[in-house]
Image 1 (tube, rainbow over the protein chains, first blue to last red):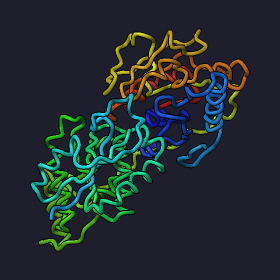
Image 2 (image 1 turned 180 degrees about the vertical axis):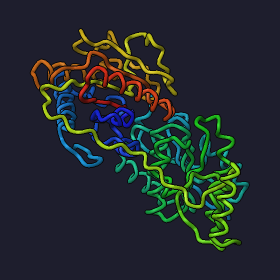
Image 3 (image 1 turned 90 degrees about the horizontal axis):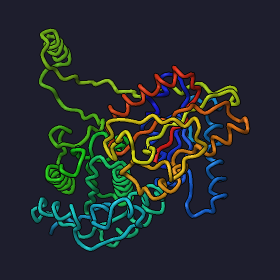
Length: 76
Length: 348
């Protein structure tokens, strides 16, 4: 999916839990997520803290989209 | 004496449970469990499964270091001669786990390993160069065909017998070159090949070109505050009731959903159609998979220009690579028409 869209030149950031899979399929901008059933959240946290966590991950993703890269890059 | 085998399987094949039990930590059971019973039959007394390691797919992939360390430690006392993992068919997390643990056992315990997967399992691409992966069907219905091949190859490895080419043995091409004396010199073989090609007959190249299936990174966004961002997911988020009937696995379609007037994805209006992970958390709060709430706030704060009024969603669970390719090309066309500048794609 990532490659099919990025082939058109539109930058794609992939937020995913299993980073090695993302690398194998060929995503270029990769942001690691929290867990498989809740990549952008954590049900153990209070709702406000969970929102903050999600905000941080999306911020990282946006930062990745504004960063020029040469090849596959994981934004920790 | 029979070779001692340790077998790795996931929570599903150990009959512990499905996705709701994918978090279970590694455990060791004496003897064969599940598909291991079939393997034992195929060994015909030449080898025997002495213990089975069971681990939840999500636990393994979310805690790779801890999981592998525990498993290797649990294995040591058995002094096994062979390690077999799976087969994982087209289950992505299971395949990744089988590949990871097989490679580690091979490196750390220095014993032969064999696993099995469908060719499109992401674990196959990740580990085919390092370990023998028997090519299987894409679903567990292929178990009966997979086990004899896995057992046969494992026995050959244990005995130190010569491993023949990938087609004969049934493993996924590893890209290892082997020298041999051919009957004809290279020039003759090349001319034979050319003649076959001219006649339109089948011929087999001796030097297949590598496939570089990569795309160049899109250029970075210069001004985020003017950018239009689209949300795409393989995590299966759909409006409640799944109006387009996106399949829970092997999806044949994707959905397009209007979020123009939506500020966040609530469990009242949205849910996941994905059958490959425990849906409880996504159904409770779909923003955990597709973060519309946060992105809406960034839009209000002026950090991003706007959110594309539609999101695109499919289920990435055993979905064929060629289907995903078609979906993404169609989605990309629409994104270009609508002047989308960048995409956030989330996967579970």
